[in-house]
Image (cartoon, rainbow, N blue to C red):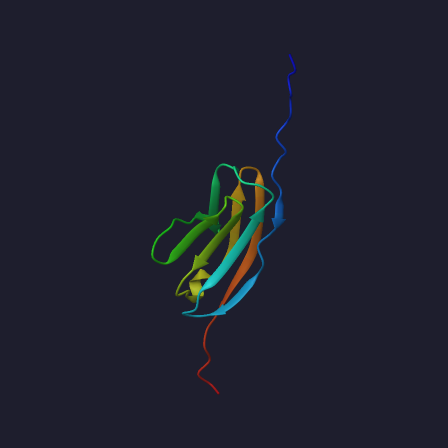
Length: 104
């Protein structure tokens, strides 16, 4: 009788969130890549408030590894810190929404 024991390797963040500067009305996309799928309790936050999938906030996942958040039609008040959490893993980036200057 041969018993094979292994411990599942903890997932790590391969590619974290990057800061985004966009203009009012544009979309901002944030992507986080994990080393392998199966990480539980994936959640996106903006300035401490949890985000949910709806017509303005698009949350998607590809192969359980690439997690993407797209904020559509952003406004100045959307500026802040975007945070991705997956289990004990955390990645954050800044979102800066710039107004359009009419003085040109």
